[in-house]
Image 1 (cartoon, rainbow, N blue to C red):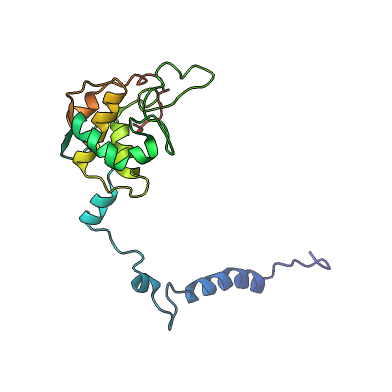
Image 2 (cartoon, helix red, strand yellow):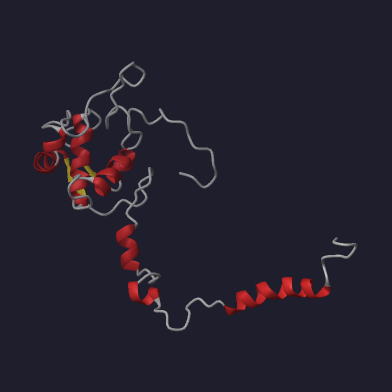
Length: 192
């Protein structure tokens, strides 16, 4: 109140309600004379099934998402020598890149060695990681057969599968990793 009179006069209330409505109504998603950036830059273009398939390459621990193909330890050794050894060492012992073999029994020690064989809980995670991120200089460049072969080779180097192993979408999820039970399950519903 000012001088005993209310500040809220009917005219001010109407103005307070109508002014925002008029301002909102005058707005447009594209003002006249302004270029539609969605069309100009392709923003908001609907994905095709092919676009989505190229992006949706994740693999679940139970093997959902594994592609067709297969690979064996011997082939994996050749692929590793050609595309991985420069960073990870001739046998996966490490170099510029992390070591990929060894480390079993070290996780509870003062200097744990986290490798494919000592730390990773699922063989499918190995496949997924190689497929998405390796080689470092050309991620997603390996074929499914090469990734299965590399997985077989690395699992063999860690003493998890025998030398005559051939992996595919059916056999890879059945590989039991040494640290499978070393993680705490996520109890939230809808999670893997």
